[in-house]
Length: 508
Image 1 (tube, rainbow, N blue to C red):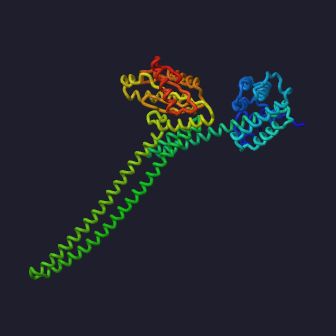
Image 2: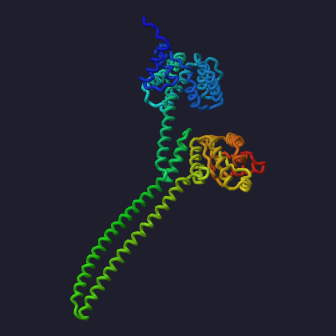
Image 3: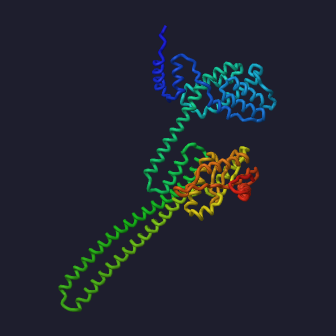
């Protein structure tokens, strides 16, 4: 019989296995290797994170199912497998709204248990694409688990044992994917920063670099990436036009240089001819005896001089025309660059607060309304206006007023969800689109934003704190309503909040 390995030996061997299998040195990976070498059952604790994902994937269709989901969340929090099993079985039994209280449903309702296992298999299969296929061992284990869950004759204890074996590997795979995503974001951030460092002279490019750095900052959302893509495509069109005009300007310069060289050559030839004619005339002048003989020689000298002057004037006019064309092209390129810089920063965003502008709001509103109607989910729209903003400007100056707007935008960006869209609607007015949000939830979100502002004073001066407050109205988007109509209702509610004493939120 082989001697039992000491814990230190097992630990060293586990570390070697992590390196050989190219696994990340996470606690879960290390525990799995250690248990495998020590021939211990690999039950690395209750898989709370994967079970939470399963719970969130379930959608209640009646009050009974909603109640069972609550019991499931509580069971997951207590890490109680038996209660998890009972809650899942009861959730499946409540599909038709006719479930009764379940004490120990697994042995009493085999058909319902089979349906529950089938649903669990479907959920695991839906999660699988997000976990990747790089780990062949995990993929094989998941396939084995799915087959077991879909087996009509599978018993609950056997399934529980299978899940206990699969859950640690599921947790490892999820952790790996999360770390891979975080690392890729860091690399992307580094590359973008490097491009920005190498391109300091291109102001329009720098604007896009700044936008990309904001877009890849966690948490990453498809909506934020879509907005940056729209902005970059707009600038790319300007860049293409600027590049085309730059090429034309280079061609004009090349043509001017070629004409200049050609003119020099022509002038050189004319000068040589002129020189020869003058020398010949000088020799003839030396042989003149009478005034009558001198007259044709003088005429020949005058004609040669006039010809030289005309050639010089033509060359000068040609060069002057080419130079004017080059200057005009360069002016047009400068104008395009200014437009490009403008498009880079103001295409869909307010340049002061970096929030969406009216054009960006229109696009976001159209997108959210389409999503609301397609998914049949609520959409709340809030319109907020800073209280006593005119007094702030009058007492502290417009520069302080601008910095107050930037401060509000910063706190709003930190307080609202990534899926929410925030736009500067007017001078001190902002519109916030909150998808999947009821009217009450929208009002609560605005109240939380007000509280966040009370905790973060605006520093008008190094030693002068100013409390910024706002009044807001919130409207729930109606199915057949336009975005303008919903914003108008929110605007009316905001004015009611103003008249009610300010620093309030009302529904419209």
